Image (cartoon, rainbow, N blue to C red):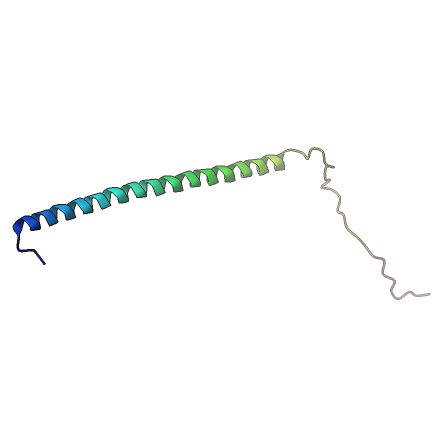
Length: 88
C-alpha cells in the first residue's frame, strides 16, 4: 500500500533495495564460509582415509615384524576321535 507522499515512497524503495542487497551480500559470505568449512572437513577426512588405506596396504605387503610369520602351506584345525561301530 503506497503512502500518499512521493518522497516516502522513494525512501521505502531505496531502503528496501539496500536491505535486499545487504541480505544478498551476507548470504553470499555465509555460503562462502560454510562451503570452505565443508571443503576443509572433506579434505581432512579424505587425507585420513588415504593415510589409513596407505598404512593397510603397506602392512599387507611387508612381512609381519615382531610376530610369528604365518605359514600358508599348513591347514590348522581341531579334530575329535569318534568311536563308532567297532567290529570285533
